[in-house]
Every structure is written in structure tokens, then in C-alpha cells.
Length: 559
Figure 1 (cartoon, rainbow, N blue to C red):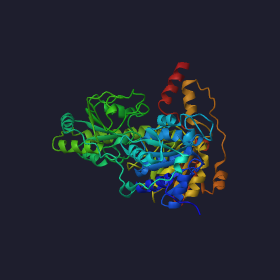
Figure 2: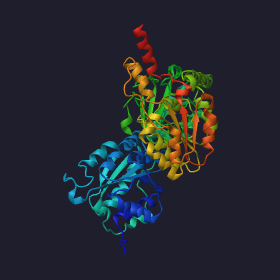
Figure 3: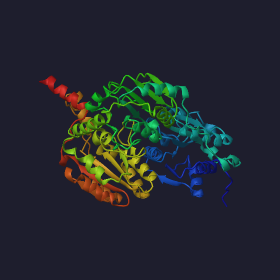
């Protein structure tokens, strides 16, 4: 009879259940069998079998983003760990709370470069560089404490992925069951209250503003009530691409994610904004046109991370604390004191309308896609995208998002995560629908995860924008190397027989006007579906900023 003495592997499984984990992602291997065996025997956690560790990491990331809880990933040591790195890097970009539990070679061989199976000397350093932190369990008795620390650190703002290595011999080690499991509460600190004096100072600055704005970032996801309280006082709002839906983007005082990158009218609007409060945003170079985007000089930055002070843009005042506590504290101090310019709201509405129209006019035959898709997607559906031309244009900027956890995209700007991000989001979405838009190039990178979607019956509609190549790269090459194209043509499978092979209902869009109706048919299916948009038939997608301007400059230079 098998010995079921309580082991470190058992403790890992029970620990995850005790802290509220109900879903975990991963691939079983020689160096994690004891932990996954314990999860299987307990049968309290849904274990999602991924086809690759990178895909699993992206799934755990998206699951964390849409649920607000901990995303959990299991990998093997060495090559399995290495395969997850791209996903950990993306989770770090996105500030996603992830717990990555990986194996290690037996302790007697650790760090000796003896060529044991899967051994990678320096694994901890690789993981530490890829995430927020990385820890190694060095003795069976410390495993519980290391896990508590790692999970709490992942969930402590600024959040991020934390890895834990547990050597295989320690996973099998018999230990006393930790009594702390019975009443376990992770030591995640409460929201950081801002200084009352700092709130008073900032309120004095903002009370004099006639045309005030707030900029919402990922760190303000829980600050929706406070942000709306400021909007009720006359503030306008705009969001980063990773802070979407904190205020519903159909709110009359919100520009949504049309924050100026590629929208000259919004940049012109900022010139008359006399105070801007940045709530929980890094003001990332990728979105700020490598910091050439001009923001109002009267900039107040609010962040839980003291290191954010002056990291990207200079500010007049920095206030440290939780974004919701800051927003609510300012709203209380500003009620009855604001004297917003009477025409400000009308100016916001006009700028939003014209900027949206002007942006849609740059999309060629795809100008109607945002409205068509928004009309057929449920209001609470999740909007997941890969880095593809359609996302870098209308997907990121003018497609409206209504909830703070309804949008997921590769913040690190890599192609390939879209499909597994969609699967992870769908598995965290409950009964809500998920739509994932990917390009054919990115789709190819994690293609095998289609079978994960099918096996898990994910409520996921995957839209493949198929232009038979790397369309973004073509635009860049046209702009910066005089149109010399190299490495851009991509041969891939025909998607209809691929869908049939995977057991997926398939739909094709060959005319722009049929996009919304076709997606609606796919969304009516209770389970995973695949929609191909034939961009060759519909027409070329115009280059987008900044490559449209670079291309025009190059053309003028040739003339």
C-alpha cells in the first residue's frame, strides 16, 4: 500500500487551497510530480494542462488579471522553467500577481554543474531577472514559510510574478503538517494610506484648476469609485492601455485609451489642461512616444511605489499611497471648491468625438470593425488581444472597454501571447464570454494551445486577423529601410481544416461589412470557436503612427 505520509508536496497543494486558489496551470514533469500528484489526490484545484510552459505562464497571467487573484503556474526545472520565461516577463510588465512553482534538481547536486537531468546552473538568477522575485527552498522545514512569503509578495503592490524552486527530494520529504494552515491569512499589507498633509497640498493645487484631468494606469484598477468621484467634480479622464475600463470608456468625461499616442487632437487638448493627476501609471515610454508626448506641466503623480517619483516625467508634486484612498481623499477635500471652466465638458465631448472620427478615418477598410464588434459583444465580455496591427490601432485605442478587468493585452508588446492570454482570461471569466484578437504571426507561436482551449471548453472566440505575414514588420521595413522586406512572409496552415482538426467551429470573414455578424454567430456557440478575417480579400491595413509619418517623410525625401 502506498505511503501517504504528509509531504512537502501535500503541503504545497493544501497551501494553495487555503489561500483561495481554485485553478492552476502547468505541465507535469519528473521534477514536479509529487506536487501535482498531491493536487490530483486532493481534487480541490482545477488543473489546466497546457501544451507549453510559455502558454501556461500567459494563461496564469491573464487569469490573475481578470480575477484580481493569484495566477499559479507549475513547471519543471531547467528547460521547462526556461520555456516559461517569456510569460513571466510579460506578467512583470503587466504587474500581474503570479506564483510560479518550479522544481529543482536534488539538493545534493544543486549548483555543482554535474549534468543531472534538467539541471541549469543559475536557474534562480534567471527567474529573479524575469519576475519580481525568486526564492529557493533549501530545507523541507522552510518550504511553508517560503511559499507564504512568495505568494504575499506577488500580491503586494506593485504586484508581479514570484518564482519558488523546490528541489525534487524536498517535495517528497515527510514533514509535520503546519498548524498555521488552519487559519492561514497571507500577510499582504492593507492599502497604503497617503499622508494627510500631502492630500491637503495636492488638493490646494487641484482646487485652482479650471480644466483638470486624471490619467488612470494599472495601479488604479481598484480606484474606480474614487476616479468617478473626481469626474463628478468636473475632471476629465484618460487611461493608459493597461489601465482601461477603470472608468467605463463610454463615460462622457473619459477619452478612454485614446490618450494622445497617434491622436494629435488629444495632444492639442492637453495644451489647455492646467492640472493633471496621474493615478497609478508608469507613463511608459512605449505609450508616450518614447517620452516625446507632451503632458501638462502642472503634473501631480500618485503611486504606491516611491520609485515612480520622477522616473519618466517630471512632476510638480508626488504623493505616495493607494490610488483609491488618494482619489477619495482628494474628492472629499475638493467638494464645493472646484470652479471648472463652464465649457470644459463640452470641449471634452467634442475632442473625443472628433479624435475618434479622425482616428477611424486612418484605418482604411477596417474603419467599421470597432463599432461592428462592440455591437455584438456583450458589455461584460473580456477583450483580449495580441500585438497585431488591428490591436495596435483600433484594439488598443478606440474599441471601448467598460470594466477594470475586462481588457488584456501584451503590455511588453511581444507577439504570440494572445491565444493563451485568451484561454487564461476565459477560464477566469466565469459565465462571461471572451474574445481574443490575434494576428496570424502571433497565432502561430502558441498554436498548440488551441487544444488546451478545446479540452477545457473555454468560452473563447479567437479572431485571427490573417494577412499572410508579419504586417507590422512590413510597415516598419517600409518606413525605416526604404521598403526592403525581409523575413516578413509567413506560411501557415489553412485555418478551416486546422479548426476541424482541433474540433473547433470555424467562421470566415471575407468582406469588411460581414465582420460583426460573423463574430456574433461565433459568440452564440457555447465553447471555443475560431474566426478567420481574410485581410488579403478585405484589403491592406494602412500603416499606423509613427510608421505612417516615417513613411511619408521617406516618400518626400525620395521626391
